[in-house]
Image (cartoon, rainbow, N blue to C red):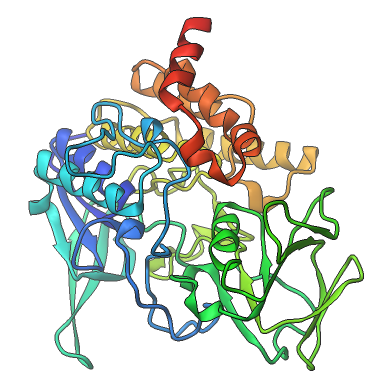
Length: 439
């Protein structure tokens, strides 16, 4: 392969920026399309929320960021940087090991400056169509639009030899399903549209979910709310008062919601609620991609994709970066970006189309045999850095440091040990030293 292919990158967040850097390093001609007027993607805070707070209306104007104003990262900065560009504490910045979202945005701004990526980015360009127009010469049309006035858009089409999709996975909300949801008279919203706690003052709030955002939001709204009732799945879901909260209880999942405003839980308890907040995650969404059914999203499985990146029949001219869950995000996306860039520059070879397709089918077969549900296709196994180490082998680089692997797989235990104060109570540098000494 020659090294002068024109490559379009969809998205100017964490994944898009590191992908642009790696493509540039390999001598490829890069254009990054970013809908916002600034870099950052999800880390670009926006106080605006969507008109449809549940995110069900396909015609709503989408607000990309899901940040709430008080958000702090839930991974230590020591594993949030890139291999050659760590997320360091800087003078005048947020010195905390788990800094606020503003510090992450500053890190990305510095990254763009230091690697001279700004010249590659087209701000205010929303991609509305990506389509293969010439299979023989692998020509892709990328149609983008820019807002000229409040009511008028201008569209433009351009041809590229390759497209890398990096539009993130925290924009299209996934909503809890339960009988009576649509007829329930109170306010419902997804955590994607949560920003500040003031609107929940003196309200009885039902919060669905037990992830990081659910725990953060519960902690933030409980001092203002009249009551908070958290609905969770799993063997530990039982009616009990939450520790360190006078007005918050944990329940099993919602059995149904009634037209009179009452919410019934599977544990038999009933509350007369004002608000239901769905902290229930997101689903992959590529409304701009027109692949004639070659790439589909089925129950949050994007496929078929070889190693979560390349569709076998379209490789290497179409690729996805940063789909996997339950992984150190920066480590996986940087390795994937390096892999895509080196494949496009000809330095690394992919298997044949048939071999890649067979690999995907084998993954699906093993998932079916083990009873692993389809929606977990891109959730990496939680026992070792198998995928990360595989990528390192493809790239002929050193595998991730052992302490990063141990830290990542220890996070849930650490959070459980320190409780909701883990961000400030845990001495991460001391922990790293102890792990290094023991290995």
